[in-house]
Structures are given as C-alpha cells and as structure tokens.
Length: 270
Image (tube, rainbow, N blue to C red; front, side, top):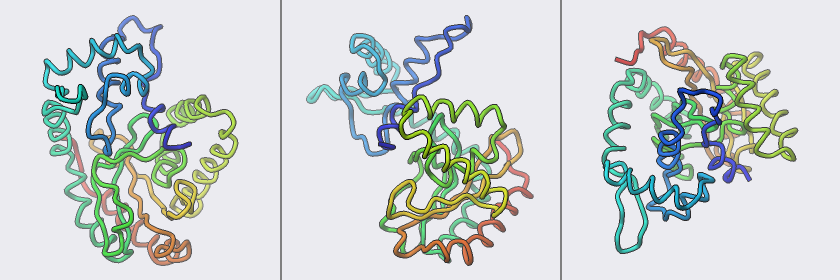
C-alpha cells in the first residue's frame, strides 16, 4: 500500500486559485518527478498513470522535455528515461550542500558501529529524499542510496521531519496523507503522533517494522541553518541485526552526538 502511496503523494497540490501558478510547468516537473530510483525507463502510458494526466498531455510534455534534454527517448522501445539535463541540476544542488560534506564522516563512523545504513534526508513532498547515505558492514540487505525515497508518514526519518516541521507544514502534509487513504489513515496518524512524542521524549523517532516489517530504524531531525530546510538522519537495517534494544541503548546516544555536531557546525547552501 505504502509503495503505491509513495508514487501518488508526489503530485503537487492544486494551486488553481493562484494566478501566478503555471500549470504547464507544474505538469512538466511532475513528469520528471514520477521517475524513481528503480526505473530504467517509462512509457507515456506509465507516466500518465503515475501523474494522473491524460496520455495526450503526457505525450506533449515528454516531447518538450526530450527536446530540452530532460528526457531521452528510446526509439526501439518507445520509452523515456531521465536525460543529462536532470543530472546537471541534481549534481549542482548536491555539490552545494555543505552539510553533506560535514555529515559524511560522522555518518560513516556511525554506520560502522551500528552495522546498518545511516542516511541524511530532506522532505520532497510526501517522501523523504536521501541526499547522503553510508553503509556499515552488515547493511547489504538494505540497498537504499542517494536519490532513494521512502514514505514520509511511516518511516522513522519521515516522522522525525514531521516532529520538527512547523505546525503548518506538518498539518498540510498529514492532510495530504489522509486524502490518499482514509481507511489506513487512523493507524498512520497514530504512528505519526507516537513519532512526534518519541522525538520529544526520547530524542528520536522510531519505526520498528512500520515501514517494512523486517526493518528497524530510528531518526533525529535537526535545523542545519544557513537557510536550509529541516533535515533528518536515520539509522536502519534488518531487524535481525538491529534490534530495538540495540538501537535505543547503544546507537541512539551516538546518533544524537552526530546531530549535535551538525547543528553546531556552520553549514550552508553556497
């Protein structure tokens, strides 16, 4: 269910009431955003289904994006994959995030100690987008890397972001999640509320089998400063090697020290 939600939640909120909102531009960006880390290429039909747009509209958008270099058309299959113009944009942003440079050695040390995966993420609509990731010796089973997305509402790192976000941002995100699945919403809301309380009382949010039943994780959100948005760092891995007790008793103090060092640092977006 949450895998489906992850695709649907990345649709931008309607802004028809805003005369400055350019719908055609939003749809074009929506097409680019529908590609995921595991996607090699997509057809117009697949893009239309993910974006909930008419296929004729998608055909015009993909043709335009191809001419601009944001998509590449594979003539033998009729599919599209992301082009080098997207790579240039992403690389430019990542290169300017000083917080990644500061965080990486600290994260790698934590990954080596925990044996799990340690990732730095920021919100992208209703997903958390990994912008840095380090693996410990036992983390091969969890192959999330830079550019990976996980759901905002059910992951430890997403709940950490919700815990530190402004009240307006949090309520807006929660309302969007509710609109996607009214049936599952009460359980999802309880998880979010528990995560916010854990972040306040324990210093971290936890997800023990909530995102994936055999994955444990915890996270801490922080304000990196320098005009950057709220970010969060998580530690996660298979529940068989990262028990709840180990994470809370051994890993949590080290995670909190990592975050404290980043908050004290002078990070910026140059």
